[in-house]
Image: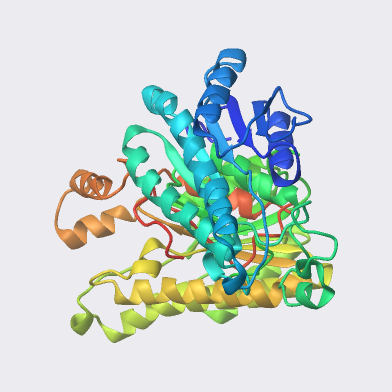
Length: 237
Length: 255
């Protein structure tokens, strides 16, 4: 480790920690010595504090982050992973589906950021990572609502990054490609061999690979601000 | 799982006599790799870096394709194999476009872009044969934005971005993962070139650059080396053909 350029493990709040990428992030951080509060609709497994909360609910998120700080110590990092995925042709996306996409992804990220930033800014340290998607960058057939929500997350990340960096707090993102998680149904087109063969890597990404990128941004990406890491198996280059 | 472990791996870092290259060599050695360091000419500085990382110094002028091939061959001979190539070398000169000496203009491109092309060409053969390898190419923020009076340097670094993307696509099916890094303003001896071009003291250049960076400071070489370490991690394959920006927020989202 190079002296002075590495953030020490602290307390991280991870949303979506009950499964998939969120669970992998929680596991990777705990392995590195972090204490992790897992926030999800259902109780997260291997975490130091499991809190059941809907990321769309700003007041509940503020209360959960507050409790994480009281029980685990000052929160030094936050990772916004909670999300859901669905495909639909543009004309068939209902208002309800559209709003749910935006409230979960963009709302979930901004609710988390609103809850943790006052503490981070007061201590002039720490960082926030949002999970976006390769589809936010490249778009995709029948992905308008998901891609719009994830694209909005990237815009928010880059703006918040510019706003928080002068005050000592870093905000970055990771935009995975199709990843082997429960969000991809067994019959998902993203699991088709024909699709996988179009990827330079010829396979789905793993939650662990995404978690490595998240952990790196928190601990070692100390000169990364508004940056997006793309572990997407080469889906978007 | 934890941080990058390169125990048993061999890395070659070009342009390693000073600045970022020396930092990359130190980091990869700290991650467990056997490191071969290269620079254009033999020097005490290069020998010192090699000594510090417990590795080997091999001088070669990378604008000469013959010397590039020999460098890779000697690396594989000396260290037994080559797993991680870090193409960090660069030649830089600045001049107004219409005044830039044409031979010097091509020297910038042939060293930075051509040198890396020949390096990967030589190094990839062994990696493909073993079905595993990591190539990390150092581009530049100026390769993404362009910069006045740096047409040769920006063109060479921009060309590297396309090379990274293309080789990422082409070599990933063979297990060879190619990515790049576009550093912003980093505290290296190269800043003296910018200071000289602007005809101001070095401290003034540091301050001017820091003003344009949301984080309010220029970067440390070790912060770029951290990205090299990430991209050299053999557990991480899903990052392929990507350019990681390490610039303190000066440029957000253009790679």
